[in-house]
Each structure stands twice: as C-alpha cells, then as structure tokens.
Length: 172
Image 1 (cartoon, one colour):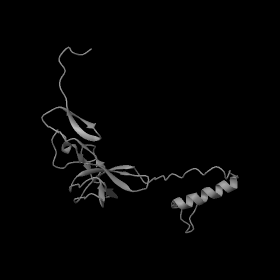
Image 2 (tube, rainbow, N blue to C red):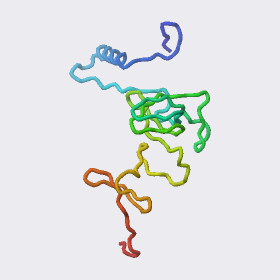
Image 3 (spheres, one colour):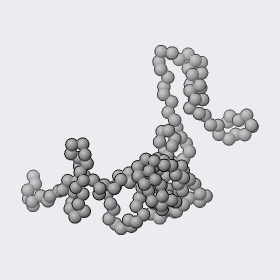
Image 4 (cartoon, rainbow, N blue to C red):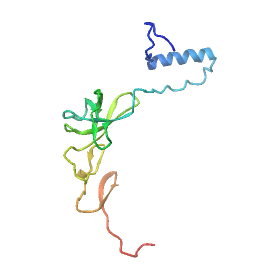
C-alpha cells in the first residue's frame, strides 16, 4: 500500500485535476495517440450510500441548504437516528419542508446532496395524498377527492381526468 509523506497509510484524496494530470502522464508513457480525445473522467464517490433517509430538525425552506440527521437505524417502518450521529448537508430545490419531516436525499454527480422527496408529518392515515418530489398534486387543475381520476396532460399542462366505469359485458 502506498504511504503518505507523513508516513501514515490513511487514504489519499485524489482531486479531479490530479486525475487529469495522471491521465496525461499515462497517455504519454504508453504512447497513446494524440488524435484520440481522452476518455472523460467520471467522479466516483465511495463515501457511503448515494441515497439517505433523513429527518428535518427545523423548517427547511426552498432554495436553501440544511444539515440533516440521518435516520437509518431501527427498523424499516420505525427508523431511528443513527448512533453515533451522522449528518449530511443537502440543498432543497423543490418546496418548503416542515420540521420533523422524513426526507430522502440523494448525492448528485457533483458530490452535493439534494432533496428528492419529503413526507408529511401530519398525515398518519392510510390515505396518502398524491405527491411527486414533495409537490402536492391535489393543487393541479381539476382535482376532485370524491372521484376516481387519472393524472394526464393536455396542451402541455398537467390536469386531472375523470374516469367512468365500463358497462358490464362491454369488453372484448
């Protein structure tokens, strides 16, 4: 194993610029063709899972960053805060999120964590409101909680479409 200048065998951080310099040297040494563009470097993160379950400790406003506690200990249906405590700093690009809400964050290719889903702490019933990435779909034009509906689009806009039952025996 390679040793650091300080004599320790801790891991060595290689930046993207360092990787590019190493790539250029290897190409020169191996006599690689200068006519072929180098392969693009892809950032790889080995710092744990790319998706984490967290919980907000205070209101989290849209277009802000927050430090979130990771809640992946316990069971799947009764998560608990990790011990020792772990946190991630994540960016919220979607909507305001209340305090005490379970959120799912994911790490993007740029290494930053982003909100991808937020729960609703007040909704403990079996009836879940339709939402995508925390956006309340009941605000889309035409929503009617008393009807069976499908979410579709017309002229580039989302809208709820009422369904109707088929007559018995009218199928193929």
